[in-house]
Image (tube, rainbow, N blue to C red):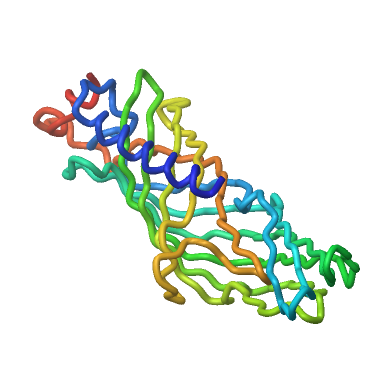
Length: 275
């Protein structure tokens, strides 16, 4: 599942880049001077974890025909996400259309079930069973730069590459582990990562863009543990994904003072904006 999701993301990036060379519909983002090129956005959402659906087995000790065996099955839980921040429209770069930065709250949670048994020849003797759970609450600082690909009137694709740093201000780990389990690892409370987000946007009105999207980690930066984009909890690894619904508010430019009666013409570029 995780491998399929990664391939799917890279295919989306490729299709979006290819779309740059085709004739595009109208850009959903307004140009100056009629509209401000910066403003606010917010977005609610949900977090989840992708896991390997197959159960895995760890052999803890083996002596002739006696094997102590632990079997694990993981599951991610849906939890809350929320973000708020500022955006800045970019008018002089071909590939990137806007950047954004802000604050986010998210809750990561999941379950690891385990069964431990002692296998002697053809006889299996249960030793222990149960489940470990975790629920970490993070406060995040994030930055993204995004590419926009118009598909048709009011519909567009969004590809975002970003960086985030976060701190788990509350970490709940219920580690009712089997006594002979080999190792346990946990995601650090302070961490940073590179991210990718794919969205399908809709221009609801001249003042509002709505972008449902899915976001995932591309690379763990802090702590660095090689090319990895999963989070360890207990004896398992989880790949976090975030589903969000972003609302971007477009603001018309408000002139603070009325121009003099004998002002010459109108602001340069206004005619193009009206077209």
